[in-house]
Image (cartoon, rainbow, N blue to C red; front, top):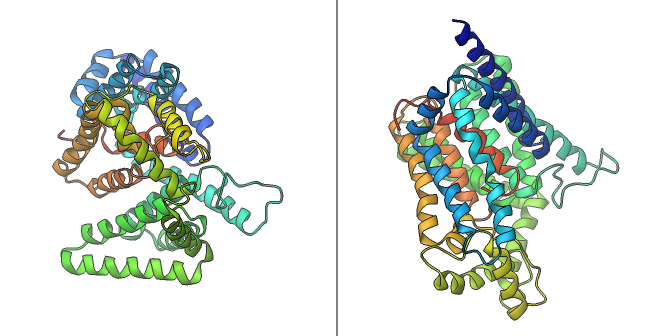
Length: 399
């Protein structure tokens, strides 16, 4: 009994840290890293290692993630840039936290975790509006588009996730009238912010999640799909004609396409450069890749030879391409198996969280087309948090 009480104290402490961590996900990576460090230390000193090992062995998602991380490590051996290889490997360090959280997380606190995350997003949205309306004198937005903490693409994606969670958990489900009114106000404010901050990836994810939301919550699938199409058309049309920032984003994309290849030093042009330079390097080492951390060196060399005037990017802005170039077909198959395990687990477990599981999977499968979200930025924390939350052993009945 005494041993169990001690174990419960460790579990409760980690869950408190996790609630706080959820709040800081969209606000501060530094604060998040400190909290994750505290969780790891607490877990290591907690008793009952037999149960920890059981958690590790029984969870296919954890095993897939650890296998991919290990492949990243051995990929440094044949990397053309070992120094950067260690840096990339270390960016995946959050993988070691999956056993911690999946072992200690308590499903009864799920609503607290989600609310804490929504509060964190609310802070970023309010600050974003303050920057947009020039309320905070001297507050410089991060890079572009009125975002206080994260790059606008990541900011928009985090908002899209929050909107869907609010609709699914507080508007469509039974809740007090006050909660529903506050939720509707939050959804409206978040959606407006999604327009003005201009993260195209987040906007695309939002539209995709709306489709899933309509289909998942209706027995008449065809009608719900048509309804989702109408909503998507209204969302895009409204943004194009009434939100200058939204129209500017679309115009910029069209301009970049028309300029290529005459001028490839544009947002889309630089991404086309990445694909052009990656293809011969992938053909050179198709099975095991060019080694962890090799993208930066290889891409810079390609640009110096063919486009010396262009901006040199250090990441591929496409997770699938990045993994294929650095870790080859073998690494890509291991990486895709992570997502296969998540999808299969989501299909098998038909509970109240099934829709949220598919939402997270869709967000990341789309986001990885236009970013290295597994190793860079705030979305890394989003992936870690919600995967741990929705695929832990206390919630999943079958893997």
